[in-house]
Length: 187
Image (cartoon, rainbow, N blue to C red; front, side, top):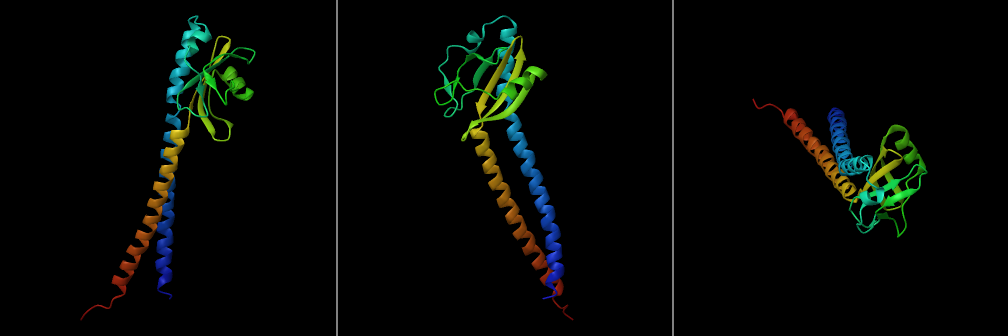
């Protein structure tokens, strides 16, 4: 039984390294997925802000497109708030009503000129939003995170499977090495 103690110590050390590498892989790829989920919103918000800056009316910028029901659609949407924090124009709805971002998000965008946050107006509805200040308005562009979160879930499953199989593989390798080293030499 004592011959397995060094084997376990070796396996434990390799397991810690495998776990660290798998954790780094997961966090790096997950953050890449989440950060790129903002890219279309940056473009949409900046384009809308540029149009408003050139004198376009917010209602024209949002356009006559039918409302985007953010609880069901993957389409990007725009919500433009005026200096009072009221909605000046929007093509987004949530359960049939105009969605309202938290005042803190609008205040931060007003103070810093830009804000990018994950917004969850209710359970099961998550959006990546980018808010840009222009003139007396805050332009908010958003888009569902559903597909990104599904990819992150699959990533988690893949990394967990790889981690588990690596631990089993490392144990098998160490058992084989131990078996080879413990065989008596032929004379």
